Length: 78
Image (cartoon, rainbow, N blue to C red; front, side, top):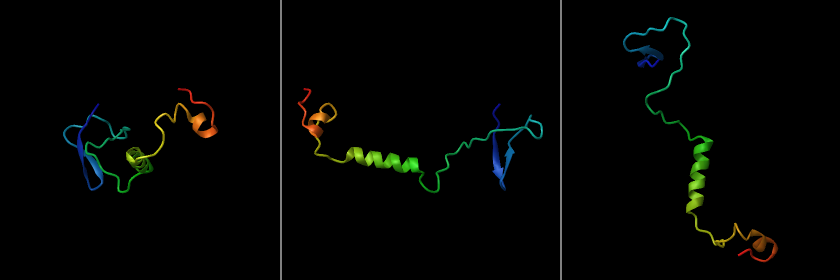
């Protein structure tokens, strides 16, 4: 069941009829996006990852495949 309502003085007031009896447990989801007051750690990590992707490096393009060559001097795989 889905109901609509508004917040008035910190209390959620349904618009229209509310067929639920008093004491019913409900889950409330806001229809409006409320931005957090401060960025969460996940937002900070996402932004850090985006900046790292854009940063230019001098790493060889085949580093993932030939990391043993670059780290330990072993022959290249390709």
